[in-house]
Amino acid sequence: MIKKPLVLAGGEIEQLQSSDSLAPVPNTLSLENGGTVDLSICTPVYITGADAVDVADSGSLPNVIGITTGAIVVSTVGVIQTDGKLTATTAEWDARTGQTGGLTPGAAYYLGNWGAVVSTPPTSGYLVRLGIAINLTDFEIKISRPIRL
Image 1 (tube, helix red, strand yellow):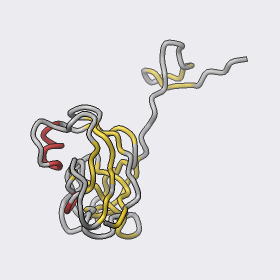
Image 2 (spheres, one colour; image 1 turned 180 degrees about the vertical axis):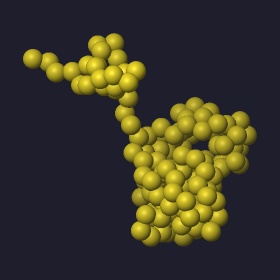
Image 3 (cartoon, helix red, strand yellow; image 1 turned 90 degrees about the vertical axis):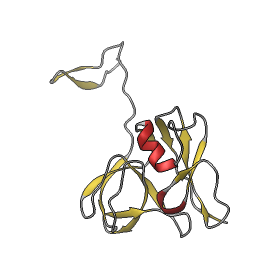
Image 4 (cartoon, helix red, strand yellow; image 1 turned 90 degrees about the horizontal axis):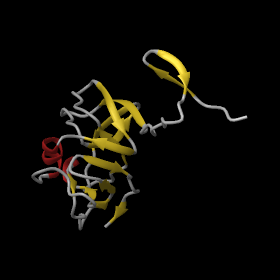
């Protein structure tokens, strides 16, 4: 016997219909901005203490845990995405990458200085690959371990 998963549709529980599928849910964490500056969307962050994060930097050992999914004011809790697809506007990506017009589809992006997301790997400090641009606004997060340069 084939069992179908139960889903919530229009506020009611029903079996998953044969024409529907379940989308993977990205892994997220709710953590506090433990730094001294507000974090904007698309900022790579690292763990600074118990349930707290701050801006990651390629110049110091950047144990990047994820990327912010929205703005997080100092001392408040926000959502950090650790993998999967992150969507932001072209303007939001431009603010983080220094580019214009959004991400470069197919390009790999790396951690730069003070939370920058750059398409050119750094030549000093630490190399951390953050992921790959799917299109101008969608980014597939796949964070690598830091490599000391």
